[in-house]
Image (tube, rainbow over all chains, first blue to last red; front, side, top):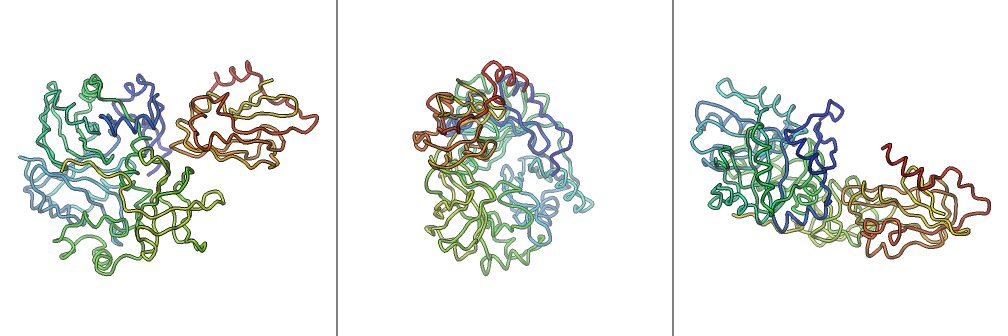
Length: 374
Length: 122
């Protein structure tokens, strides 16, 4: 999690510089926060067209075992999701948990068709060193962890993403949300998943680091595609009600408090057998003491991470974990945790910003409806 | 007379009233401005103290008072159209007007040439 270690670069650093990106340190990497058009225009471009993100800082790896059941069971010892029942060609979202049921990281895991016994993992950049160490230390002898230092990751997000990839010869049109399949563009082999972190339809594309510049340039030749920085990635995921690790979820929050119960399948809820199962099963049965909620803020002034959440009589009941200006909402939005009794949509609360109480109302998440191709 | 601070504010002085805003360079660094919190008319500002807060999509940044003085007007247009700070930072996107006390010393502020040279060093 250290941010003061030497700054790393992705294979696309020169490409970002050529596009005039403003680079900032993020999770130990120098990453583009925005390109010259700015965050609002980039955000809107993703909503209307197709945005290309370099997310090569994220950790990619695989659990490798003798067969799917063995590998899946090894993963299930670390996460509350059902890995055993994951069909070939499908991806799911889950969380690495500590023994108290707190979240060490959130991640995607997938099962590539025709690769029995391999489960691919994508974890957060800021957590990857700790994640890999934690996973490796908790595997049975017959399952090993491979990490892919030589792979890059792109995300192509927005309603025109499918057409862009099809125009380049990748037949992704038959893929559904959270499908994973191998494709080739201009001779470059890639693993594509129909997923993302924007709330829009889109794809994440894992390619060899040595091929990523060529693929990046090819995608940008399509006039429907523009490069998008981390700034718009953050405003899109916030409007999508998606958690940012280290902010909306961390070791002090459980998946139930975070509203991620949907990612824990029925068999796992019943059987347990994952770290912190006792707490999570209890919270599923009795309800957690607090919940992550969405807050629509009146006026134009944003309430950001750390702002206190107060009831109308002035009692502090929680804190904002992510907040900012929602370009599509055209107003400020925030997420934070409040006790269950205050968590009902429609509840009026105040967010305290620089001594001022900003009226806010709890709304169901997401702020902007997801447009996944289910 | 238009002067500048190292915090990237501009100060246009006309008689005993100074109009204050942020520079073209500053708005470029901030990115899209979505909200500006302005002081109330009548507030006494102290040189180097907080005068306003400008919020971009990404973050909130303080704007410091370039001189001592009393706020006599705040730019109400920014409430409905904060993007004016990006579009017209040194004209229509001004933040506030302040009345300067007699004998105000502006010698620590930079003229345009000095500010341009300062920005080049960043």
